[in-house]
Length: 193
Image (cartoon, rainbow, N blue to C red):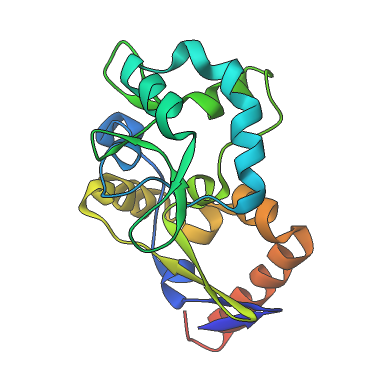
């Protein structure tokens, strides 16, 4: 592990290969699991504000869940997460004609309809951020659903932190990311990566 400011980064984030391969996984990470995506408190307002923009993209079941409990709920671990449909699908999931799952919020962002990209936990995936008092820990979450992403990452020699540059900069800032890259180069020179 390395530490930059108050963020500890696992070596797996630095050395494992990863590039999302939506054509292979069909967006499974937004569908499977036992809870919604982790949400930061300040993102709840953003989710509520984007809701009218994406409402027509959502399934009828998702709309029913949102009308009943809102865009987020507190899961069994006490974490604030996006609401889910049938115990698995995020309420903000949509499907294209090929059956690929995608995020209605991200779609609206890419179409210029909102300035909110999507919850940072989704944008950072497969990095999970753990909060430990004054420190945050970045860990690589391995999941069979993402096997194609590891293969594509190997093919292109793209590490997790490189693939996730945009969300890492969004979360921690450009200066932090620049320090991360310097640390990675130093670790390579020392033969640790």
